[in-house]
Image (cartoon, rainbow, N blue to C red):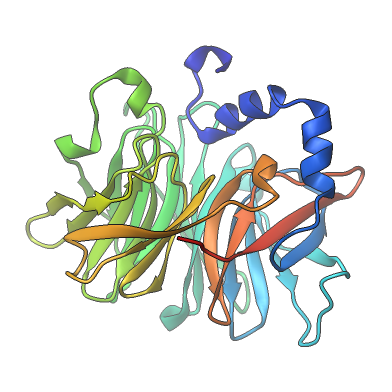
Amino acid sequence: MASFLCSTRFFVVLFLISAVPIAVLISLETATPSTHVYHYYSKGWARECAKWDDLNRRFFVSFFENGIGQIAVPDHHSPSDPLDEVLLVRDADLAGNASLGIFIDRARNRLMVAIADVFGNRYSAVAAYDMTTWDRLFLTQLNRPADEKSVADDVAVDAEGNAYITDCWGSKIWKVGINGEFISTITCPLFTHKGWHRNLVGLNGIVYHPNGYLLVVHMITGHLFKVTTGSENEVRPIKLVGGPCSLGDGIELFSPTKLVVAGNPTWLVESFDDWETGTVVGKFRGSKVHRLTTAATVKDGKVYLNHMFGMGFPKKKHAIVEAVFSS
């Protein structure tokens, strides 16, 4: 795995793709999809995250080379017609950093973006952008120069507007206030596992549950955690039947009782006891696995999966694929 010095799944995927015969890639790429797919053209190779903006009928996508774009979807779009990506914002002072996990904070009309120095692991931040003007509302650096390496990977927002950002290198969660003020760091021994290979990529996808707590996945092990925040933070491992969700990446609530864990495969997890326990009730492995599934979003009552890598030259053709789960 390219000497195990990688800090994110980007390096892991490069290794995996290099091991796949070209003939297999061609077969996967030309296979007829079993579910609905939104294809779109882009100038960039890698798109880490996609989220559906239902009010404006568009997907937001984050750029691995820094920036945010949108893919507008017409009301009567034909699946055979590829869409086009349009750049919304790219900050010159963040050049060299990747835009990773994103979250639509509808109540405050802002888009939250986790930002990281993926290759050097020396800069982690969270930014907020006004979704009308695309002015940057704040940029908060999460690590200090003297800190250990870190990679800000995903972001969620609670009912009060506080943001929670996962560090997939150090397996911790940063908390930032509504106006960008740094509040605290949430750590727990449960976030770190025995064996260095089980901590290559740690805490990854994160969501805020409407009942007032966080759900987060540890990527390598696939373990899920319930994190209650407040004056005292409490971390509980979720007892998972049919798991773990190994190599789970971004996560998304399909409903208060159903959680999507994006990966290869992608899991659908259900809980009826407020996420003390959970059961894997469905899996999906589409024909685009070679593109790497990295994030999930809900559009019109259906789950769609972002795939990191585009194919083609000079335009790169990306895919956002509907997930239909089977037991």
